[in-house]
Length: 512
Ligand code: NAD
Image 1 (cartoon, helix red, strand yellow):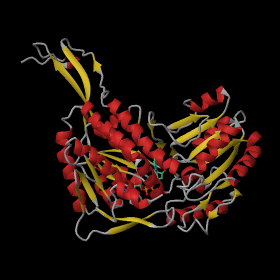
Image 2: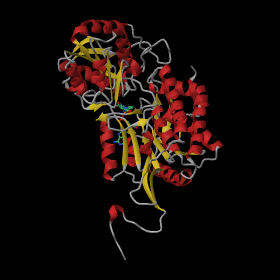
Image 3: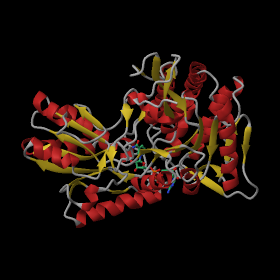
Image 4: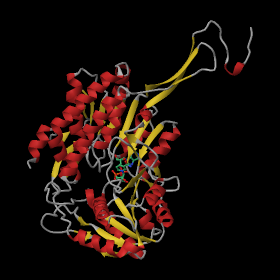
C-alpha cells in the first residue's frame, strides 16, 4: 500500500485548494486557513487542505447559477450520457479511490471499494432515470383541453455530507440531480475532504472531455459555516444534508425560514427483532456485521437487539463467542473485521456512552475500552461491546456513533414492535423470523415505523434501487432509487386549450 502513488493518481497534493467550480478552476483566498488531514488508521498526516472563505462560496454559487442556464437546456438523456461516463471513470479509479476512502475514513478496504461500487451503481441507475422523468396526463373537465404535468430542474442543489460515507452519499445526490438538470455544490465533511477532492478531479476529467461548462459540479471545502451559508441561501432551492440530527434540525430550520426545500438523512437507532422462530445462525451474522461493520459508524448500524425471552440466553452466548473472534486493526488489511473510529472525539463519545450506560444500570456482557499498543498508535481503535439494558435508558434512546450493542428482552411481538418503535429515530429496522404472520405484522401499518424494514436481513446496508431514508428524527428524506428523483425537480401542471372559446373551470360563466 503506497499512499503517495494513490494520492498522485487521484491528483491530491500536499496542500489542496479550498474550492473548485469545475474545468481546471481550483482556488482559495490568500491567507486561507490550512487544515491537516490525519488518517485514523495510523495517525499520519495524509495531506493538507485549504478552507474556503465566504468569498469562495460566493464564487461557487455564481458559477453554479450560470452553468444552470446552459445545463438545463441539454436534453435529459444527453445529461444521462455524461453521467454514464462519470460511472465509467469511477470504474477506472475504483481501486485507488476505494483505498483512499478506507485510509482517510478508516472503514475496511472491502467497504471502501463497496462505497465506490455504490457510486458506479447510482450512475447506472441515473442513466436509465434520465429517460424516465415521467409526469402524468389527466383528462380535463373542459372540452378540447389537454392537461398534463411535467418536471423541470430546480436550479442549484446544495449537498452537505457526513464523514462516514464520504463519497457515496454525494453521488446519490449528484448523479440524480445532474440528470434532472440541476447543478451541484458539494460541501463534504471537514473530516474527509480528500476523497471529495479526488471525486471532483474524476468528474472534471469527464466534464472537460465533453465541454461541459464550469459550475455544473462545484466543491467547497469547509466546516459547518459553509453548510450554514448554504442553508440560508435562497439561491440554493434544495439543500440535501446528511449527518447528525442536531445538524439536521439546524439546516431544516434555516431552509424552512426561507421556504426552501430540504432533504434530510439523519441519525438512526436501528434494531433487529430476533423472534423465537428465527434462524439464529442467520440472525448472528446480521447482528454482528450490523453492529461492528464500519466500527458502528453507519447510519444503519445495528444498535439494539430485541430478543425473544425463549432464545435470549442462547443467542447472548452465541454473540459473546462471536465477539471474541473479531479482529480489530488496520482496515486496509483484509484479515481484520473492524478498523478505527474516525477521531479522538469519537473515541471520547464512545467511552462517555459506556460510562452513562453503566450509570443507568446497563450490564456489559462484552466489555469495551480503548485499544493501546502496537498497531493502535492513532488512538482511534476501540473494542466493540455489548450491554444488557432497558430501552428507556437515555443512552439507549440516543445514537452513539460507535460499536456499542444493546440487548433487550421481550415476551410478545406487540411488545417487541413497541420497543423497536420506541426511540426518536426511524431509519432502519429488521425482524428475523421464519413465521409468516410475524413477518407480515412487522411490515404492516401496525408494524415498524422506520423508512427501511427488512425480513431476515440485518439493518445495515441498502441497495441503491430502493428509496433510502427514514422517519421521525431521521428527517423524512428519501434518496437514491425508486422515485427519489422527484425531490430534485419542480412539478408543473399545464392545461392547453385548443378550442376557439374560453370555457372556465367549474362551469363558471363570465360573459363580456
Ligand atoms: P455531522 O452532523 O457532525 O456533520 C455532517 C455534515 O454537516 C458535515 O459536513 C458538517 O460540516 C455539516 N454541518 C454540521 N453542522 C452544521 C450546521 N449547523 N449547518 C450546516 N451544516 C452543518 O455528522 P457526522 O459526524 O459527519 O456524521 C455522522 C452522522 O451522520 C450520524 O448521526 C449518522 O447517523 C448520520 N448519517 C446519516 C445517514 C442517512 O442516510 N440517514 C447517512 C450517513 C450518516
